[in-house]
Image (cartoon, rainbow, N blue to C red; front, top):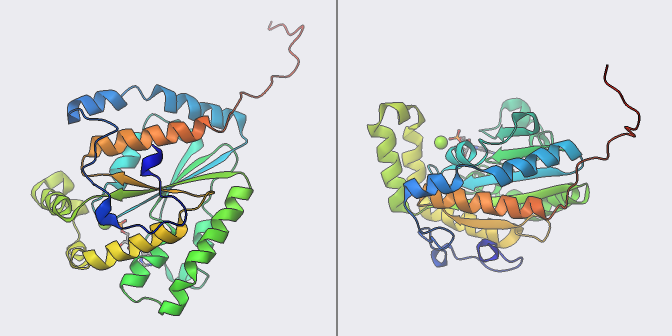
Length: 265
Ligand code: AMP
Ligand code: MG
């Protein structure tokens, strides 16, 4: 899994990362679902995380429109206990949010003890959409990479494990998925005409993502580039990385109180 991780300090060129890579799983979609289906290991680990109540886990999901952020949440996290899981989605900031620094709304949503929080978009929008659309001067957004690294370092040093996933699709795959949103009545609600305007800015976004991946993959908050043209490969890979990450926490169920002589009448 290490080969999907962006080594701190490397310059990322997304063209060199294959969105069709299937080294982690070479089967069909149907087989892929089965592979993911029992989810038992991930479920058990989250159970333990919640019971132990010691660690905090932050999962950041970023990607172009249709890259599969929602689908990842639905498929990878669906076996987890809602008691210990929360999703935070970041949209266009409200006026109230805009009246504060850009990390203000983000910091409020970080996980507490025993909790896993998924960021569906994140503070990275403040160096992505903000940069691509000139919503802030270059001087302002270009200072943010260091600020973000420092912020994530604070979280990490306070007991938060951070994993960040960039869902990597190519432009053809996005076309297919946008078309599907148009064609299928149950998906049409997800179609925004605005997404077509964003699609025209594909190269600028890729460039902005390359800078994010190059500047903000750190030892304490690594980025993974997830091949995401195949949804099931994406899910299996993310699930495996999460299992790996949680296993490293070396968690234990809390010691029970002294139960000697306890009788239930
Ligand atoms: P969706 O994820 O499809 O619900 O769309 C949310 C929209 O909010 C996307 O178009 C994002 O680019 C936008 N967004 C999220 N964060 C920010 C931000 N900090 N500044 C401007 N737009 C943002
Ligand atoms: Mg959208």
